[in-house]
Image (cartoon, rainbow, N blue to C red; front, top):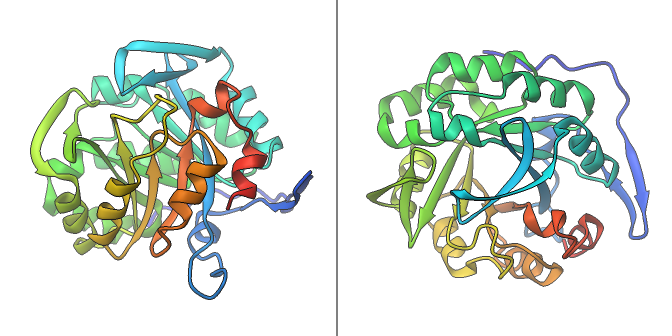
Length: 280
């Protein structure tokens, strides 16, 4: 079992206009948060950093030719989200996803060392060694996508080896799984792949509806609900969240939906992290 090299730093507590926000200090904390209202797990809003050519960008609908740059300093951006009260950070190596191998390991390691909150990373993690390299540099949770679709035997083995430190990212358009950096559409339903991953022992699934990603028009709540019903493990939704109302709509699904990932809406100033967190 590979473990994160935790640093001896105190837990943080940041105050904003909505009161104190607890900052998580480990991946286990994230998954084992106490239930609220005795019915639903705590719902977490997770800011995203997408890396392309060493810069922070966002894509529209997962298209590599429709990109907007927001920062040339990923480490400063990570620190920014931590200071704004983020309890977890989602990082995507876009070049890695398109190339089929990690392309931003140095930048990811700098991010992990610069902040105190846990970081999850996906994009191009196609081998066991790729996952171990992420874990060795301090990443709390490695996200695999294409490999989970292609090699079910390996998925079960990896789930057993890495436990909570492994997540499966399932990206879909029209309910059908997309792989290899969102350029190849399969004939497999996202809900079916989710059920297989759940049965293999995967503890966290990240579901991205590509049609809504980067569009600022709200999430596909019906698709998220269908996805969640297919599994018992924790689900994190991604794509389209752009307002407190969107967070409330997702939160109302309850059950195993543990949070949502937000990118463009935060970078464009459509909503603040404090506003989204208050909606939880």
